[in-house]
Figure 1 (cartoon, rainbow, N blue to C red):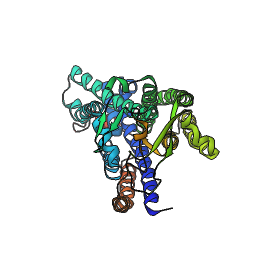
Figure 2: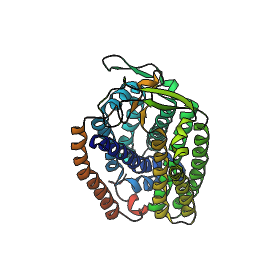
Figure 3: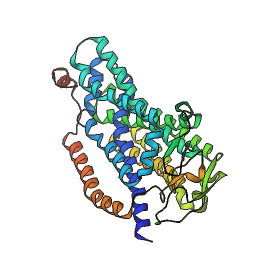
Figure 4: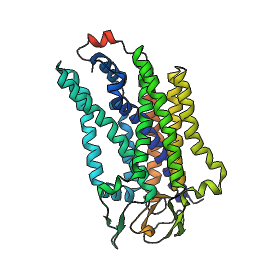
Length: 377
């Protein structure tokens, strides 16, 4: 395979790794925010839940930076088209996430019950909304996004914000939120004791069951919608634009790779198996194992997304022939080569530092310590 085509595939895989890292690490923190009012029935219990993720939540945001930076550098047409077309969605995501650090930092500064209750709801919104948006954005990829290019390769978004909240996208958003809630519940099991850990255990089982049902429903739905088929293009590893290809819409085409290569069914099977195994591990109170199996479930779900769509990255509902793919949306060979070198250094560094931080700050959160520490969340 040509070096350029190899680099394009490498960055398609790396983008998947970064999305999995974002879903697991950021989704875990946001899951705790989503379930905060369930696992924490008193003010002290909610403070314990916040301090379980307190040492890590801001560091985990680096996965957002890595994901955005990777798209910007490796697939600039995706970045430009998505950020301009999804402008309202991006603002919604941005404003919901702005509330997140404010909630952590300001919630416990005043003893007023009304003050703390308001910030608890803000943390719920800033945990639930971004994960729904994340899942809904992935769901819309299967339906196509309404954009098109003119002769200067300037993209024009022809849809509306409401259209993005279609039934299939909502299903995918709820799948994302349920998996996030499950990981948040398992995280509470890891860091809290007693009744809070039991509530986390109960919620993890419910969330994983819901996740499996939604994942299966999504797969059935995808089998009955039109998918995109790349009929002709300059080919892999050839500099090109979205104006140089032919695309057709075919019923059930998103499952073509799985039908043609049976081994690929292992990818969605990994998603189901990870959810089921994490549910069983949580039921057995083996929360650390349940967390790793939950991460495996995320890998299976996002892997299914990438496998089904390949080589498409951002299909166009307005002009299918102008859809963005791995081949026509990537940067130059030189840029991808430099980016690969940086990734070989910084991605392992981020993984090492994150692992070290979790190891150093392992253990249970002591409610008595939290109650007497004015600097705790």
